[in-house]
Length: 171
Image (cartoon, rainbow, N blue to C red; front, side, top):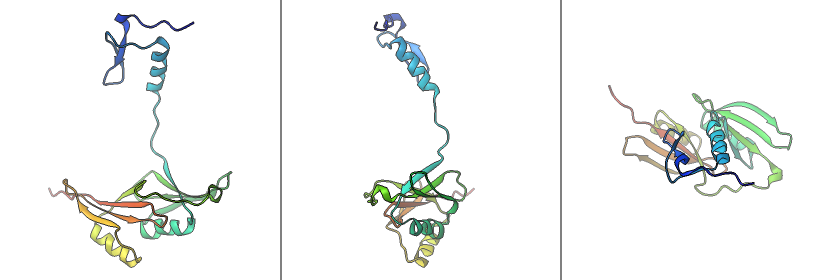
């Protein structure tokens, strides 16, 4: 039997705070209202990690460790055969998972698909650091309207890395 729809006086719509108020002309079935109430109560917690699949695990890990200064937190093989390395940036809780999964075929990173962004104290100093590793910015530096400056470098597999020097405010 179809569920009874609310009457005109009982129709409801979401308020900005996510709760529901009665408003004429907008209705939900009783079942949908229950489902939306359940979904509204569900939230994800903090971001734990981001995965990047690569063709050359060791080369990529060396880049993130030696060039970007990330720390290798753990390494293991998954039940399906993926080799996983988890890296952590100083001052961050979230991890970056670098994965080698040969059964998935070769990785082909599309241009401008995704990137990771890291804060740096000084882009000028970081540019000198990159030169010591035989690297250079692939784009930028560019200063924004707010005074922050950003530049990009390419990781070994073609994933972009954004480096951001936030504007320093004086008291």
